[in-house]
Length: 343
Image (cartoon, rainbow, N blue to C red; front, side, top):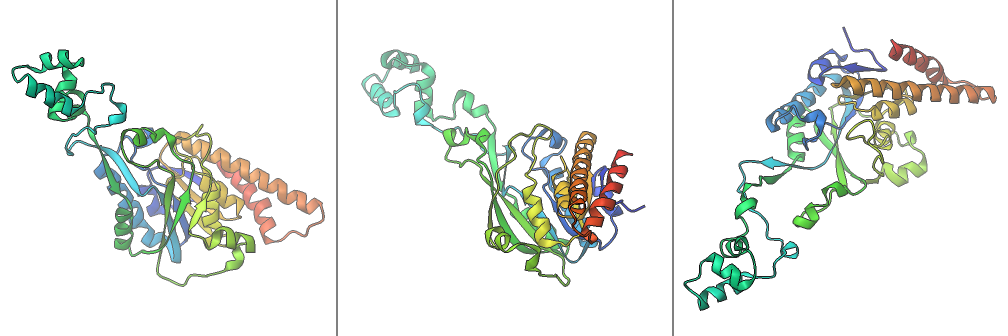
């Protein structure tokens, strides 16, 4: 049995994607787990995370329309604790509580060669741990027990999986978001930057692609349709999901790459942003989500958006606008959608 359109389906994408009708998806747009310790991804090891991405991407060689697109939103660097890395603690001189330097200790030892570290500490007015660290390096005591953070590029993982699936890198755009100040300890304890952008990787399935600039208004084409950098504020409150992305992000992708009535797929639906964007742009959608609570949240969001679109369409008719094919989709298709999601 094939997956119904305009519905959020509960289950693992690796299983359910096999039930999507072949060559039916105009655009698949999704943001996978980032492997950064979120609650919903803690069941995955690093190897299992890579396996998940590769398996999901592999399915797209069959379900995308020829000429269709897979667009993956993901941060380009992956950061995680790596037990295999040498455990070396950085020497952050601006955070040192004691002004005693290595040179001070060495000078004291030269004058008092018979002093042990306790004697030197008393002489210099510091702790014996400070003497130990200055003489033997900062990776002493507590620091040597801290697992290092591994920084790994993600783009190569995504591209190699897509290439193996017969999909080709078509474009890459940058989403500039709000700076992630929860990572602010990085710029106080290291030279690492604060995270404030992510990538959108566009992969193409060989086939004839319709290029129609009239999908966008002239202003949209100038402001973002032809631009490689998209400035879109992050979601201000992740109150119902740990990692929501703004509706504007998938909306732009959907409007740029598809036509009204096309089917859009999101394999990691989360709170429903991609489905809401599809409804807003008069496209059909298929959503897949592993967590039951997020299926419920996304479904509710879709019903609410459908009702708003139907009210807007009815209002235009009441004002004397002539109904067209797209109005019919809003009034009839979304009415059916509401019924489907209430079951």
